[in-house]
Amino acid sequence: MHTMKLCILDRDGTINQDRDDFVKSADEWQPLPGALEAIARINHAGWHVVVASNQSGLGRGLFDVAALNAIHAKMHSMLAAVGGRIDAVFYCPHAPEEACICRKPAPGLFEQIAERYGMSLVGMPSVGDSARDLVAAVAMDCTPHAVLTGKAAGFVGHSLPPSYPAHTVVHADLAAFADYLVAQT
Image (cartoon, rainbow, N blue to C red; front, side, top):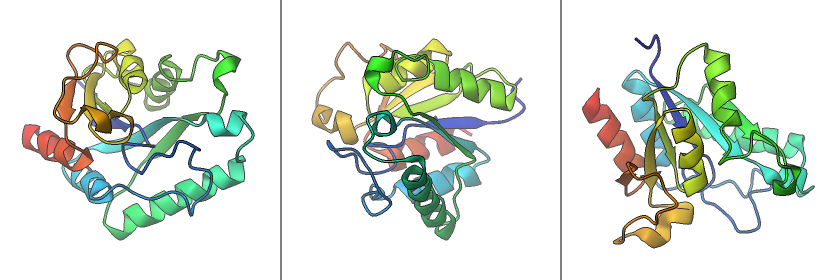
């Protein structure tokens, strides 16, 4: 039995607007409509929320850790203003060519989460907009949930491509996922 209900979210394209040129500053970080309120609803239903995010812009030299910290400070502040919270942010700082074990679709970030919380992630919901988010989640036996925002926005009205795990549950956005999760608890 789990001692804690833990929900794992991708960041860019799931919580905030994604950018082809990367989110490089707090000014560029803009929450998706309803996303922060959705996290607050998830929290109020008894769930802890953590973020697992590839941040290859660090490895590419597009921004530094201070800029990333400022982005996350803005996210935490805006969440607090609507009664929500993210307990921790786990991120991969590496560029793709570094072939690390923490860059999704590798499961390293999820392994870090399991280790930090001292628990199995089996059955825990993990939400993302890209196939690699959910491939990483499934490697740790999380339940994959896709939101049709960010990279998946083009799939509205269509089936997800086969690169997504076969048993992925699809939601219009993070607010729709929150409605689904709260109804289950």
